[in-house]
Image (cartoon, rainbow, N blue to C red; front, side):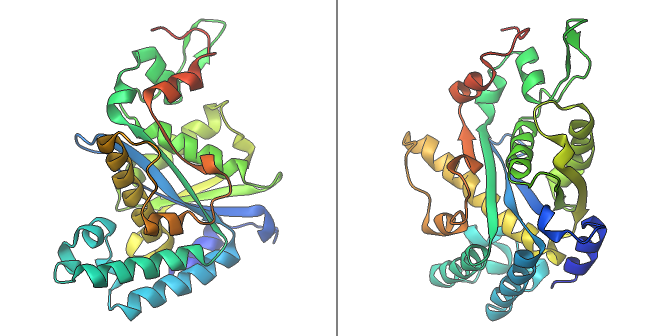
Length: 285
């Protein structure tokens, strides 16, 4: 545990010694592939010092419960599968509480964005192009780039970038890491660079670098894995119950304790997505 810290901070950190201006964000996803009804991108962002302290606390929790880093998978833990198959509910709950405490104990802040897949697909092709970052040429009255109209997770990814950059100090940079062994990592780098060069929707001056790392060597990615999966389950529960004000679980509430603003962890129905683009010209449908 922890070999990622110095290497990744050196790779993606500042060259001028101004650590106070640099933010590190770690993102993961749930529901990107297959016929998932919900798509979530979530994770945490913060400065180098809190991340180092978190690293130690997370590693301590894993060691206390005898969990090798390469055996940690959020879905298996929550469902009691894989390495956690023989654990009773009490032990899994205690371990989850210990992990959530490691997140909440330090100044690392949650970011999450979720959408319902069928809501996204109800939009017209041009609307989905716009929502997923297509660049509209007002003079030629056509799209110069196509966006990703079949991939709702792009909306969630872009919204998470907006949250992190909005919390980045003027003159600072936000550096991002995704799991190389996760679906988001397959697309994030190309998408990030497209957004950085083409997007008018966020402050690209604050976008630093993006990289990938193995989750079994990167505690923040393990935390992002857990947070994204719990958020995914909570969205499914809300829709099934038809209760949009249902509170999250105690574990999820603990993990969002350091949220800077309520909208930093958000989900969007079709009506909310339509409100986002209501004043955008040249969209059909």
